Length: 546
Image (cartoon, rainbow, N blue to C red; front, side, top):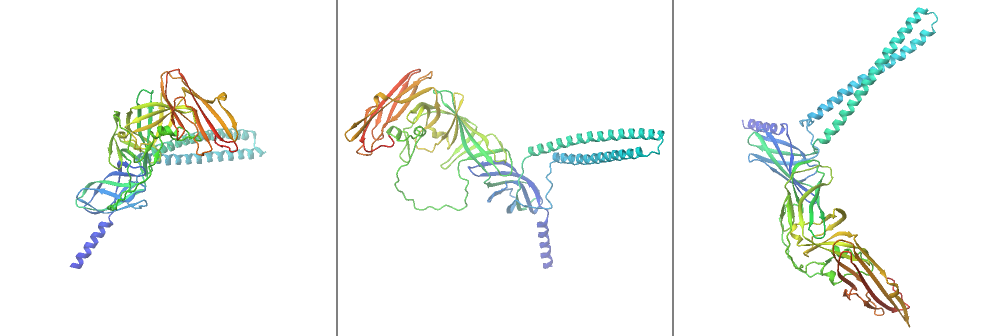
């Protein structure tokens, strides 16, 4: 009896595992997108009998991290195992053909058969005409026919030839219309296929033990690397007296193999690396390092012509890592909330309030995060020695509260597209400088004054005098604040003597040779700045970069 009981038990278990699998299709409901990965949440419902079953969940991502798969199920369902595969083959897998597409495909097959039939009928009519023509020639050569018989043969040939031609033309017209119908059906098939939601080859095979038969809801989560996002911005300003309207956006793309339809998106700047290994702490050693400097946009605009360096005024605009921040100022800015922003010590997350569709085609989909009005202070900046045009700079105070991330920005000023800039908010300074482009309405020229420049030879020395005049004209309807920079050379050789003869009221940094003027120029006003310096060096030696 005991052996019989064991055999029945094994037979029952074998039958349980041998039963046909239960198929279901998962739908993406939410996606947390990182810079180079995404955590997808999918839902599915499956009707299960009591006991052990194999569930095949279709329409999961083509490539997933199998170690990150999580299955949420009711308490009466126990998950025994989970396996990801892209090559599941089963005789029980149902046909997923769309009913609409099936009708189109059936119609295409029917029309193709009719076209083939009409083509055969045309061929028969054509061969009959050829045979008739051949008999006409034979009859014409037979001299034994009487006139009456020849007339009768001619009438028959004429009537039959007309009938065959009419049939052939009718069949040709019918074939033409059928081919047009076939082309329309093929176009409809292509269009309907494009409209269909894309499905993937990925499948999850789940072994479960169910305590109670019935419909069971499943929630599936996993990590896939087939997605990512990058931030970017649109900066709009109408004039130099109002705020900057910033549209905070994201470019989201994915190639998971499944289209995301009406999905709740969450964008995170954090890392997607997940580890089940508990962290350990090592000894924390401190050491002193030299501070690193990062130049802001204003300094970069100098173009780095030969000899141009940084003075103390510029150093006030430089980020010095680890050496504190500038004095904070109280500034208010309005934000239009179309996302919920969560910030912790490691990353910023954006919960998009509006469901989005993101196709699995690798193309970037623009997602709006929020609108911000940024209070800005504007000033003009010019270095005519390097670039004979003025640049408009916008200074943003206390920008850290807007959770900006490094990214590219489009600049639109006064209704005109200016170009692109890069926002780099990972700084310790409270002021963020944005380059708003070149201002063509400020004319600048820098020319050498010939009658104030020249060369003299003194015994063994050569003395050269250089005089330059910079002319700035404000062609705008409003006044501007312009920071102008120029320079004179600095010697590192004791045999080369340099004397600044005229600075025209500039702030001079004698260590770097940088001269700075803060000018207020009224509408239509022209200002002239003149500098002069003298270089003395041995006449038998040359200075290559003078």
